[in-house]
Length: 135
Image (cartoon, rainbow, N blue to C red; front, top):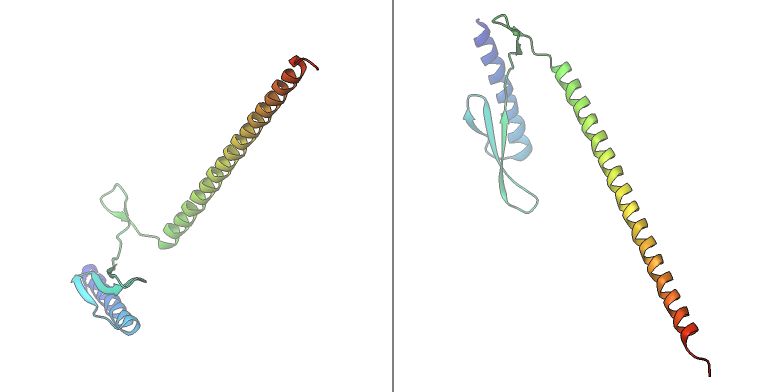
């Protein structure tokens, strides 16, 4: 068998396994929409009709610049993905900390401004009492 025939057989076996699994799990029609895709009609929590599209592919890898491909390494891609998720989570945490620090600083400024306004109001009242003639 050629490489393409081997890959097609593997893809078809995987699609058939997925078709049976989805049919047993969801009890719905599993529709072939292309040579490598299945579509499943489902409903969401509110009863709205939605579609799940499942694509099965056998990646070649990345071009190596010499007219060929470096083999696809799912382990390396998964590791890169996990590192990317971790980096995004760290950035999100830093952004949230920065946001909370800004909120705290703004609240502190408001409290200082309010305290200053109250102090000025108290001074004005003292001046009124001082300037009022005593009877």
